[in-house]
Length: 186
Image (cartoon, rainbow, N blue to C red; front, side, top):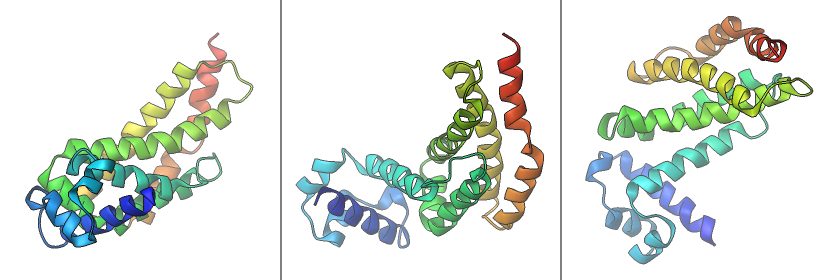
């Protein structure tokens, strides 16, 4: 029942974002739309921004299911783009109304989750610390997020498949090379 309520709140929020900016949406608007009490909202979330963060993380979880390996990272990245496109009104509204920082944090969590899985897989059996693996994942995460933020800022017009292909060409072998460089310096 708990997740059912959260998903109902998510659906209402996304529906309302098609009608008005996030800073004009109230908790009453959301709870009235999905037919629950304000108390039920506060049982799950402390405020609308907490709901937005949960929605972002839930979208991320769904987008990346099973796509965190070296062989599937490109597909995972493509699914991140698809999740952003699928939620375009939500993403654009949050981007314009709240802040670029909130979208950055959402994208950082998405891409870090994808990349750390790849780095951990490629690091298996090598002499590399957790801290070094996190550094490598963070390094590439910032590149991904920068590219994606530019794409969002430009209205998501460029074909994300082309962007993913360019990223794949740019990064071919680089993550494994970064891991090897850290491993061999001991």
